[in-house]
Image (cartoon, rainbow, N blue to C red; front, side, top):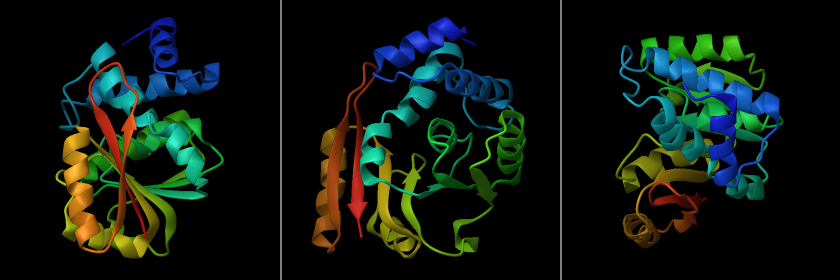
Length: 203
């Protein structure tokens, strides 16, 4: 895994200046993912690649999410904890719920949350077991973002923030949602790695 200095340098390059304790927790999370990633089918990425493609990628939406001023966030299909855990680590004032159906991955998340002492995060095994409505739902795990998917998530949130790839593809998905009566917009993310876009749906 990367050293603290290497990891922090890449964060700063991405415009993410974070406290030392926060960076250390992010590194510990990445180390746990690297340790168990292939065994649990989470990711094959390691080192710099994991840090850029998963940890930093998860945090690229921070400024946008801050602008929504959420008090509660539900991360759907969390897997290794992206983007939910990096967001929860950097925003301890927001209450997070991570939803993951696969039991082995859920156990991984439970152990990681305990190891890192992330007090603002709880777990559920299925979004359909979630009671209530959050300010924002996030996810990186689903592609394409279909009308059926958005419609199924609508009862659980006020806004939806989906991490996607190319702006053109996200724009096409936004147009499809517009035609179905949803308010959907694209938000290009600034990244030195590859093209990344948020698809924002406001209910």
